[in-house]
Length: 79
Image (tube, rainbow, N blue to C red; front, top):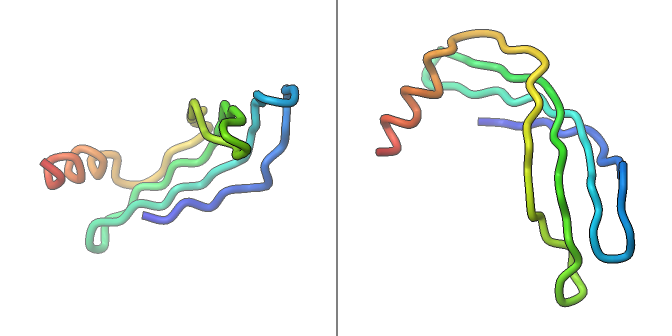
């Protein structure tokens, strides 16, 4: 699996919480089979003990290509 993320953009926030967005394209492979998902992430982040922590991740899918059976096979392999 390989995920390519675009630049993070702050869409809302204050000194201790923020909402970020970035584009994503994820390539997933098992052998020669591939499944690609493209879209964007919306991330919730919060400042805690002087560092930013991710509190929420939402994927908004724009397009899908390839073998859509791959996620199920990967989940079965993971047990």
